[in-house]
Image 1: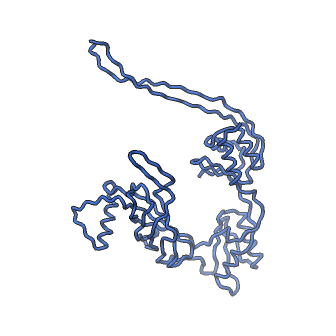
Image 2: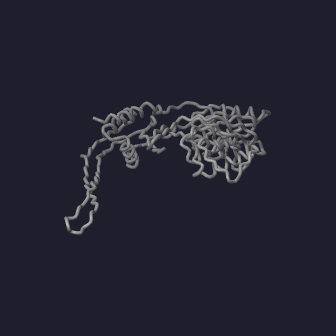
Image 3: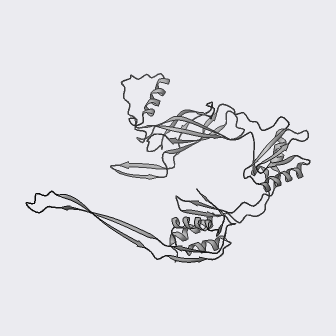
Length: 370
């Protein structure tokens, strides 16, 4: 009988797996992005205050103490050089945000805040106004606000409990854009480039053909597996033209079969088009145990010897009987789950077995480890 946890992981596999891909039309906008208007990343250094004793230990994190001094100085509060601060309710953090394409000044942005020092938790903290800069060192937004933290941590008298990651939080709409980012979607001769999210010769050709069929003429041309160039035709605004292009329906090529493996949690998720060829799998466990017993060696009376510590080590190895399982060909998720459950391996072992099946050519899918 397969272990219970093995059954559970493949129950999850079937529950989360994608249905077998079918040919269905999708708008071009779901398959491409516009060149010249990418999303942009921002980053900034800030301080989170109001923590319930879970902030940085400023004696060990000098830049937190320096940042506090600079902030107070900016507010007109000057401390003597001999002043010694040791607050535990402040933490140095890095703040990141992503600007979507075509965002304008005044747009709200979601921000992520992560501890930079040795703070134990950011729960309950408030981010002070923090300028966010781009790669060119220009300030494009400012963030501030109360943090939302999903994890928590608590410690007392040497005991501690922790859930998730309490040193990372989010502020929905916590930043406001203050500066626009220039875009260059259109070329001087009136053309724009569509960048395929999944480059493919087949998809590029299908997209260009569908656009030309609906908008007429040589409106679109596939210049590479990842680029389709469209040219403005007729008296129509740029916005209306791009809206029509992105609304064209096209049937993309079926995606390749994929197996996603989460090595940390032991979760395996397979797409509906994964196939398993006949294979033989042998699985067994080797356990090595080392036990140390400390003892004291006492010298004989009047021998003028010295008492000495002795470390006695006992080593044992136990190898369980291996299973040799013949896996039949499987073309559906139910069949694959049933075949792999026969092996009776733990989730960690199954990850290695899935990779080995891929290397042997029995698993017809791409394996991605996340």
